[in-house]
Amino acid sequence: MKIMYKLMSGFILLVLLFSIAGAVVISNLKVIDTVNAQVGTDFAINQYATNYERGAGKVQVGTYLYAQGSQAMGKQLIDEGKDAMAQNRENLKNTLKDEAAKKELGEIERIEKLAIEASNEVVVRVKNPDKDTSIQEKHLKQDMHFLEARVDALNLKLGTFVDKTQEDTASSLEVAQKSGNQTTRITLYAIAISLLIALIVSFIVAKKITDPVKNLTNVANRVSKGDMTEKVEVSSSDEIGDLAESFKRMINAFKVMEAMSKEESAPKG
Image: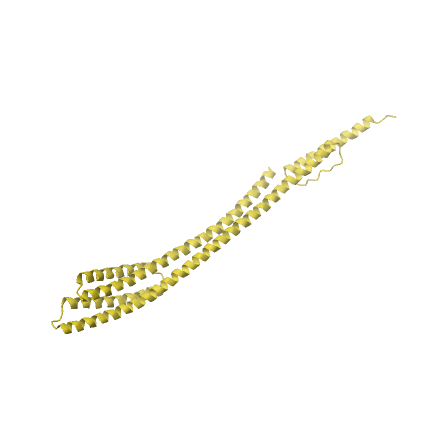
């Protein structure tokens, strides 16, 4: 049973080594999952901010078309732009975690309201035109200029916000790539080291079992040829050690029998 315990101990050690290697790999995979989730979040924020910016552009273009007489197309673009800004603003509010970014979004929302107010003023101006066409045209130009200034301010804020989200996305992608490369290296190292230690442990365990067996085999061969001077040198305390003790007793018994045989065959007197 002691040999079986040795084999089981070696097996348990190997299982432990591979378990440690597996734990290291799993730990790094979790890091990659976290980084990938951050990449997904940063990409989503970038898309929301970009769509927010496009919504502001639609409001500006729609208002211009509305003022130029294309009221149906203009109203459609204005409504689409407002919906896009509202939807993407809410998406950003629900996605952003950084307090500084949330504060920046609050400032963007304030400027958005000013831009929408300017757009509404143009729409109202077109719906209720001044009787004097020159005054109406003058007021429309002023309103459009006011709208353009507010939309430019909104686009400037959104552009800075989009650039920041692009930088965050690129940074997260770089971290994800580094984490992936590191995990690949760690996995290869863990497998290589585990296999090396497994080979060493297997060699040591096998040597502890096979060397005494070889020694006993050599002794048995010499004894079978009549060489009773051979000594059994096995110090293990397992079943092989018990077998070696049995060999010793057997050789001693052969020696006694040989001595008695010589005494009986010796000439008397």
